Image (cartoon, rainbow over all chains, first blue to last red; front, side):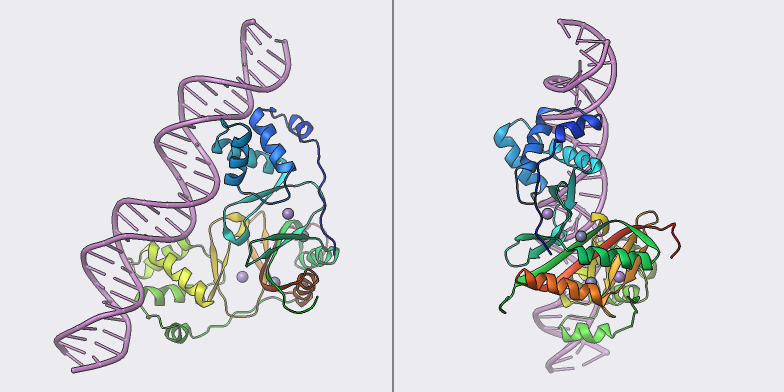
Length: 144
Length: 144
DNA sequence: AATGCAAATGCGAATGATTTGCAAAAAGAA
DNA sequence: TTCTTTTTGCAAATCATTCGCATTTGCATT
Ligand SMILES: [Mn+2]
Ligand SMILES: [Mn+2]
Ligand SMILES: [Zn+2]
Ligand SMILES: [Zn+2]
């Protein structure tokens, strides 16, 4: 089990390839997404964006998140059933452990668990397209 | 890996124990929940309820789902980030495989994967309170 | 069975997150 | 620069869910 790492891909190229225009709002939103370690929701992205350009609208943030999600450039999460939260899709796949007390999100990756999921799906006659694994936990008292 | 089974618990007793009143809407909603195999959302529960008593309101469905969730009598899911869907909590714990083509929800249970989750959380210094594992897949062409 | 009171309900209005219609602005090809 | 198409900002709409409040109901007590 190892922690996930982040790398900075060339999103502008991806956008062009998808036949989509590179606009000022999109550039700003992509910068925010690539330069953060957390999992912000649309409102948080919006607030960070208007600090750079106060003419950006919340609608555009939502539209851009939908676009990037369809392109596969970002992932959408709904921890605790709250509003959608996003992160860039690049880097290795990982899952999340949410600290129920603090709200902290910890990323982890386990080949074992990924393989097990495949096995389970296959036993049921399915191929996995994607999956969602979220652990909700509390810091343990016991020694690690 | 085994499939989950359902049993019919005495909810009226649980309600009394929790100090809440047994009302007509609650009885009807509980009947719906205990007699279905699927994972209906509030609107679906509401429609099934008004067939039995057309004076039941959607608000009451929502309030009842919140009550039952707090009591631990039902579980709430948000497959695909859609509206909350519910199922009775009784029976063994299980996770879900969602057929991305048909929307079918298949239940499964794997001790291995549950154990692995515990291990992962423990390695990160956490105790799991609850978790969410959803596999999204498509029927495989390959022989099982 | 009738009474009293707190708890629950139905209704409609409010909320929060997200989407949409549309006219104006910007991107990019020519 | 001009032209065409996409994208944007804004406001209004939509969707799921919650809330306020007057009325009804459950149920413990006479
Ligand atoms: Mn992440
Ligand atoms: Mn289930
Ligand atoms: Zn995973
Ligand atoms: Zn599980």
